[in-house]
Image 1 (cartoon, rainbow, N blue to C red):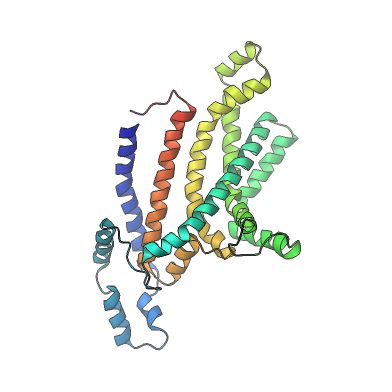
Image 2: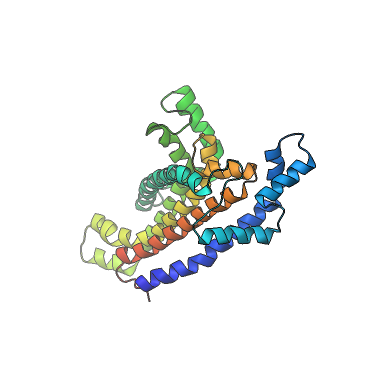
Length: 306
């Protein structure tokens, strides 16, 4: 297991570097110049050129990216162009908020997704199954920004049960978590349903039934446990997707998290901040997938890593 973890971490290094390289190059293709934004309206060409030299923007792109990697080796994510503060400090202040939001959304997705998926599999072909399918289609089809606005309109403006925006207390977490996790609920529910139906038709389930074991025990002890592995894969992937997908949700609910930091950095062409944030999200995505793979062996002892 230790050798497997080490290999996975070594493979993750070029993957993360590739992600940062692509994001760096794509960001430079976006029209706009951070030096112009910092200089302000009516600035002269000399002032803009001076700011570009100060920021190193007059250098070739590959040279700028090389400077970023050299700083990264020494644990330095650079300095934000828009605020002048260290990027690591900016990320340290916003990352816990985004991680908290992603965890709350994931927990909600797991509880709702498993419940809907198990109910749908247990009631295959019945009204409950069709209702669950309709709910999952709704979750997959609704854009997060539209769902967030609708939730604010109903629960904040009309009913006045929950805060409209911000990040103050437990109540302010509910609507963003539902908005962010709605799509994940649908994915987990569909995967749980299909995995359970496949497990229920397996030979070992028929053998357990032939021994006279109760249907409830067969469902929970034999079918459900074996059906969890594909669902865990989806949960790990969805958690990483939720971290990146928090950009829109945080903007809708005015949450000062990492997603909103990335959005403001993109608008300001703040290359170091975007690079640092993308690097952190990429690392977390790799670690989540690694933990997911390790959980396979915990759930199914037959799985071994060579």
